Image (cartoon, rainbow, N blue to C red; front, side, top):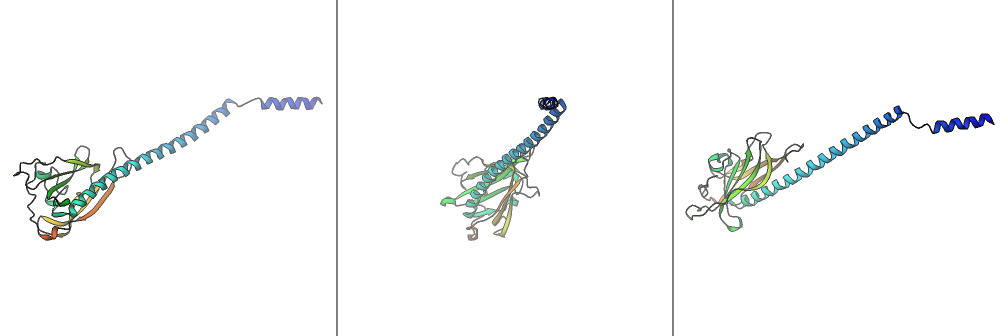
Length: 219
């Protein structure tokens, strides 16, 4: 009997002993490692979700801009070759501007698009303006540049955003134009996303005078 009673007290003594300092440190270390792994995964997922949302928003804005260009080019009477668009008329290098004489909604007007990049940051925007072909003789004030899409970045291949495509309708005009712009949200980890299309004017085959939009307002 005495031996059994003593053995029971020894077992209870061991059960009430708890954890040693070393055991607590080991548990805390394991817990810390698990929490670090979990937080790393959460942070990466959060960054990835934020990048995807920002990229989707910028791509959507760029696509809306291209849809507007497409609408004007499809009704375009004259599409000037982007390679001949100089900085004097657009304040951007050759190939970074597109000028079209169009009759969207039955209204004859000159429209101009440009991709303007900040040399200091290599980031910029897609901008647009329009004017009446006879704005100067009519004493009209051309529209100011309006921003259609932001967070544009240079093409990694170095090619300009606008380029002649398809058949030529004259030395300075074309019937189709390739448009490729790259967008990348600021402070994102994702690579730039390309948004591109080929636009063709339906009215360029009728031989409209290519100098109708030669009187370009100051950029």
